[in-house]
Length: 467
Image 1 (tube, helix red, strand yellow):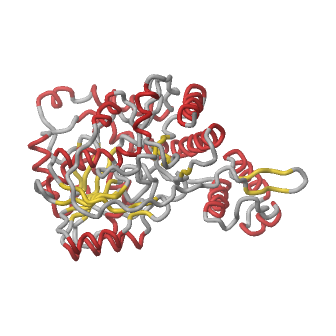
Image 2 (spheres, rainbow, N blue to C red):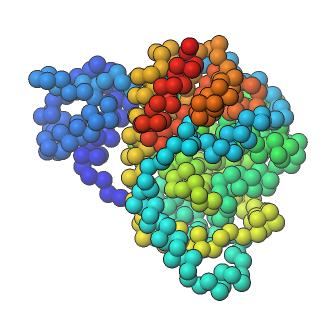
Image 3 (tube, one colour):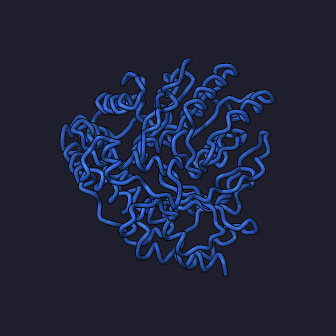
């Protein structure tokens, strides 16, 4: 969707704050100077400044001008000793199942009333309902093809083409969500007992898959500031045979880390040299606040990157529909899908196809990213208001979560049941490691507004942790 001039200027000014070109407390150039610098009207500049003021990035001082605030100054989590660089078996605690059964993967208060669905979600349901009513007899009597709807694959292909990845519709296979895509990718590229490298902290869904497939994990350091450490991976590759590396290059959960394009190239080079599969989890790629990162798959030079994603985070959790672009494992993945899943729902695929083809998905993303950005700021303001200054956290430029470091002496998992008795469901940091790291960390999500009951829950949680 075409952006207004003031939105472009807002993003440019915000980037200067994020990149510390303008630091906290510094006065911004005057409206007149900004107008001359960007060759735009003063009204456009004023509109952009008002947006930045509303988001808390800057503050207006009477008769003085605009200044960068201290409100969103990140206090990045301190560096820990890196996880042991060695293969190990995975055994997730029962806590993981308990959180998932409560539907609280991205909500500390899952029983709280949620906001009304957006107009785009209402439109999506209309497309799905229309698809459900059409060609009923054929859908009842025939399975979908293993690769999934050609029309939907074409829309996914076009969506990626717009962000720098050029594949054919035939290169994609529709799956039952991103977790299913990751499962098929691991099954296609690994055998029981193989070693798999993952970023640390890692997505616990990947750890769950490794446990079920009897694969060993090697945790590779990743931070919100520096992203995935390709140097550490290279050291591991020099010592052990690693069949696959699972990474989330864009806004990884829980760290919010982003890989630089140079790191993406380095990772592909390592995969080529050591005959390793890269499994890219791109589920947060579309949830950016400044610029859409180029998928790692776009740097693939030998068909070694398997791209996995879905609509669950960007559109609806209820849509268990994703995709995988398997590269050299494409045919094997298609066969594995046929064996394990057989086929996907044809009506949902058809409804999503028309929803995307008519531009509604693109428009939904445009508005949803603005909503998430506001909700990120709500959560940060709430944390800073109700929690002590000693906590540390990142400020992600996309995704759904903030990675919070609590006092070094605390084990957040010990507070899980205490918080649960108050109706609050925590996601302790220990879930994001197979080696027992991140005990004093906590993942908080801004997938929902931090207002009313959720703000009260954050306030209550603060009292619980520091009394």
